[in-house]
Length: 452
Image (cartoon, rainbow, N blue to C red; front, side, top):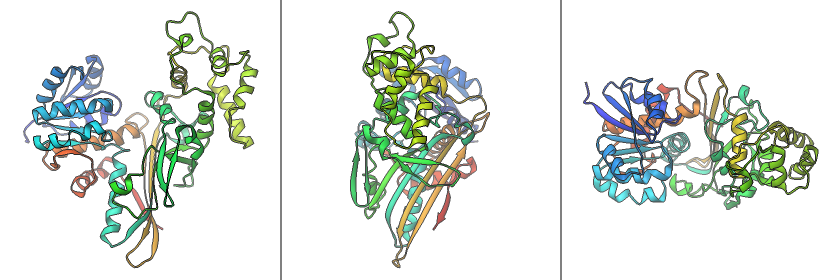
């Protein structure tokens, strides 16, 4: 039997469990799940022999240093802003680290120190980023090996409810806090389109959506995800006139979301009237009245005012948005608003009341890469790579599995000495991504490739 390996898993959110389950298949692994509140970690580890719980405040440097030093590898599934702190502790004790997050500037600054310590700090190994890198680079390198070049690259990924669970006006449900999803609607987008650098301000992001055709059964739309312009260099596709990575939603989401943006619901300025300590009940009609600066909180007046913020001129889509506003209850005097301090957080609380997954409901992840290829002989074709996966009604969600399992695979390969490139790295080279990809199909994670 292999020598026992000790793994520190920071965080116990829903992504942590598939990662933990994968790692504990090896009888030689022992995993410590650490959270600020030990009872959260204990709830998770109670299901898994071979796992233990501990209380750990990662902002306590001495405690973090000690915990990291006591383990062979640390997996950080806590907010990305803490990853550099975790890596700093790992460098001191020469222990490996794995995260699913993008490499931030603060993490990148630790690259030289990680190399000097001889440790692997593997990042970007979940779904997006993660699985998307693996299957994109597989095809890109195949084309290059055959003497061809990529003239266009588009990648769109979405974590969505399965069709039968998309039963609300936004066609969306939350696995965790709604705040991150809503804040993403304020992000600027930057990408290459037909040889031109396109820059879209967050306020206009929902106006930039367009249909994304993957399977005829899905009415999907997509929009740019932050700054993907540098992927021409990162993926070594300098000839790609189009290079865009984006997010997928169901049809109708952008129009409804844009209306909420236009009404001002993404405002995160603290408001005294919305403070948890403010006296008295707060009906939603009053919240919306205050937000829109109207003299009346009559629901009909509020609906008429909301309608002025709907930008689409399509009659059916306008009806869908109005129906959505009524469904949310944000013009109702009989629906109480949760006081959370800001308009953004009050809306988040309402969305979480209405749009969490119910018992037995499935989520879905769908990822499509689309490549325009010029072959060595001058001919052209289109290649696609599609990953479609559904959650298990009484098991792991697809999103949790496609983030947690690749993370667990990478951690195991590092512990086994099969991934040993030191530094702060992502799965961008064959020696890193091929061993990970080889293990994904056994976990039900794969891509269907087609050449058109």
